Amino acid sequence: MLDSISLRDLRGYAVEETVFGAGPQIVWGPNAAGKTSLLEAIVLVAWGRSHRTTSDGELIRWGAEVARVEGRLGRDVIEVAVVRAGATGTSGRKRIRVNGVSRRTTSLAGLLRIVVFAPEEMLLVAGSPSLRRAALDQLASERSPIYTNDLATYARTLQQRNSLLRAIREESAPRA
Image 1 (tube, rainbow, N blue to C red):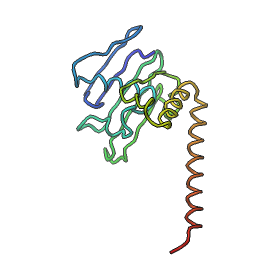
Image 2: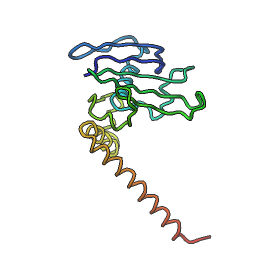
Image 3: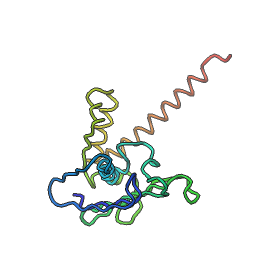
Image 4: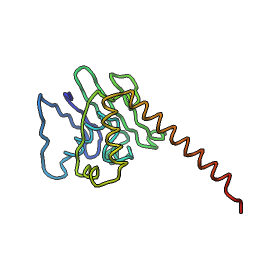
């Protein structure tokens, strides 16, 4: 269970600390108050990535160089830091630490289990089968770190196979 979450320079938040009690939580407030950004921070702690964007740079508050999110789960502390490309000579990166030790995104599987159901998730019903497969992969990855590793191996193998097929096709194509 998530006990608390701290945000620094994430989206519209300069600094925010939220402590959660036992049981269900309600997040409410006026439009543009940061409710969705708070939920996105929880997803960032659970998955190591945003459910709203593929570009980590979008998470960093305007004018800041680094966004940090720290989630406390009992004795465990998960920190995700996103560094803007070009900040202090960096190429931009994301750093994940669990209890102060650097980890890969895949190591977060199962530490904080969440299910995201946002308006855009309606595409699971009406959208392409690949969206449904991705959602099932996400759920299975949370249950099993082994599945997460197998999925990454499968994706790499598929990419290598497709590259090889492309190379073969280009070699056998008639030269002009």
